[in-house]
Amino acid sequence: MMYVASCPLRISLFGGSTDNPYFVEKYGRGSVISFTSNLKTYITLHEDKFGYNAEGRKYIVNYSKREETEYIADIDNELVRIVLNYFGAFPMSITMKSDAYSQGSGLASSSSYIISLIKCLSMYNGKDMTDIEICKLAFELEQEMNPYCGYQDPYGCGIGGFKRIDFERGGIVRYDFLTTDLFEEYDMHLVFTGVTRNSKNVLKSVTDNIHKAKPLLKTADRAYKALLDDDHEKFLDLLNKSWDQKKETTSIITDNQTIKDMDNELQNNESVRAHKLCGAGNGGFFLTFSEKNSLTIPYHSAKINVETNGVYGQIV
Image (cartoon, rainbow, N blue to C red; front, top):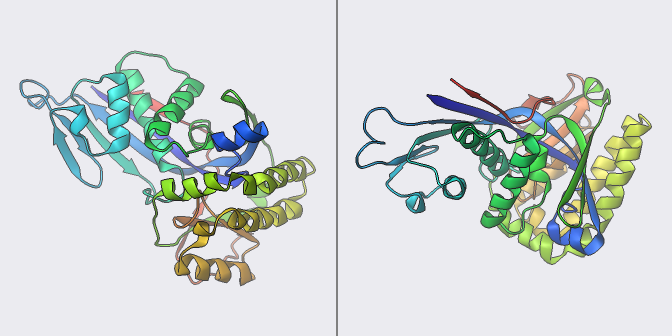
C-alpha cells in the first residue's frame, strides 16, 4: 500500500517577520497576507515489499540523494528524521519531490514537506488529523529545526487559498480567506536568483533586530484595507513599500551582489508593476506582478497562480 500527499508552496506578500514568535510575544500580534501557489511538494511513503523492511529493516529516503539506514537517528535529512521520530515510525520508504527548486528558496518548502510527510504518516497510522492540527504540529516540529522560524509557513502552506493570517500571544492563529480579482488583472511570475541560503542565519538576524519589523505590520494592515476597498494600485504600491521596509530590517536580506543587481533591474523595469524577494531573503525567488502578458525581463521566469487547496493525501 502507498500513501501519497502533496502540499502547496506559499508566497508571502505582506507581514513577513511579524509572524516571528518573538515579535508576537513582544508586540501582541502579527499579521501576514499570503497565498498558496500551484507549485507543490510531494511525498510518497510505502513499506518495502522486497525485504528491506523484513529482517535487517531499513529506512529508505529518496530526495536529491538516497539514504538507507537502520535507525531514524542516522537519517541525514533533518526534517524527515524529526517527523519520523515524532511518530515513532517503523522502517519504510519515503520519496520527496518538488515542483520548484526548494532548498533555501523562500517558498517555505521545509514546512510544505513536513506537512506532506505528516499527512502521509497520519494516514498510515489511521489517524484523522485536521489540516489545522497538521499545521500546528508542523510548526512545533519545525521549531526543533529552526527556533527562529515564524508561524506563517505551515499555516500559509497547509491552508489553501489567498488569505490573511493573524497571530496572537499564546500561539493563537486566525485566518480569513480573501476575495479579489487582482490575480485576473495581473500576472505573477517567480524569478530564480540562482542563490540559495540557510534561512536560519537570516531569520536569526531578523530576530536580533525584531523591533525593525514594526513598520511591516502597519503596512500589512494598510494592504488588507486596500484589498477591502478593491484598490489594486494602492495594494501593489504597498507591496513595493513593504519590500523596501523588509530590506531595512537587516542588511543580510540583500547581502549578495546578484540579489542587489536583480533587485535594481526589477525596480527599474517598466514591465514590472511590483516585486519582492520571497521568504526570509538573501536568495531564492523574486516575485513579480505585471500587467497581463507584458513581462519583459532579462531573466528566466515562471508564471504562477493561486492554488485554492491546501494539503491533500490519498491511499493508493
